[in-house]
Image (cartoon, rainbow, N blue to C red):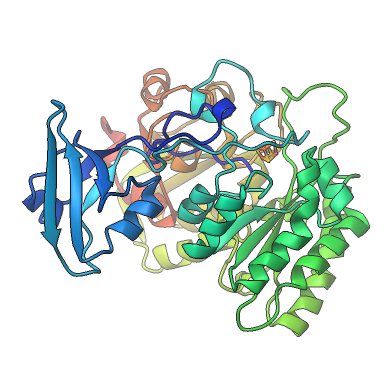
Length: 467
Ligand code: SF4
């Protein structure tokens, strides 16, 4: 359940030793042009102390509070002077304020000790946000990060119910209580069954995730987990909306003797053979395949990815389920009217993780059918993590410098943004894009989705001094 809080989601001081603290004032980062806040004279740097006498704990509280029609805002200027602003507005009018923090009372970190935790498998000395063990139900609700439910207090449960914080995204790993406790190294993990019933009784919903560690929670344990989750997946308002099954990621920095082993092609085939029949059963009983295998299973197994239609509405795309099929589908749209030729001729390179390179080869072939365009695909391993078969999002700056050295990069390099921290141009090893630009022999262009890729290929600008 590793997801670094993105640069756009600044977090209040995350000292977890003291538990949740009193909310700090919400510091204004942006004021929407033409908004009520602009009319009132709000400026970045202003500190919102309270709304109608209540100090918001986070963005959720702020959203709820600003929904009132009559507001009394207590605001502190950067120079320390206090103002009280009273206003009336329609209930659905937003104030138009953005804040530097999502959480004004600190991040709830996890109280588990999973041996497969990716955060513990990093080298020391990188940026602080990489070591935050986010297990905060507010971020799960706001941004879809996974949580385990093991650190919630009675007040938190009450708040989830009262504010209808749904759906949440829950790392399950196993439903058998003793096994889940062992995987999370936390006796509180055994309470999941009761917690699922709690969600069901209140008509609140979750998406689930199972990180499979071969020899620990695969085999019969995985069947039981998915069957138990599917037991909450029926009806008009299912408590469990979907369950993603993803392989454990292990790095060379993990401690010796952790009893874990990487997923082999045979493991991947065994998991696919176990889950696909369950998908058919669930499709018949629930009307949805419900349990979703991430793309990595098929890539590791060396098997073709399922067709796009089998992923329904891609409920677990953020978890790497159907992402490649979705990308290929976007590419179909983006290449629907390709020119027959481009002029002047150009040769560009595109770098991706070695695990996904083969699946993306059809994209390269389609683009290379355009006369005058040559796209060179480089699927790289990650010596940084010690992974030969790696997904694109885990490639670091160091991996790029090592892997691309001496290769033919053509007139310019297309670099997927997924390798960077969201909202910032920095790789997982803290190398900055500017530094990479300085050290590469060709211009570099950041790309997002399929449209970006096609537009960059059709553009001649990288032949010159692309920024
Ligand atoms: S210890 Fe477990 S629950 Fe906590 S962040 Fe790591 S993987 Fe997630």
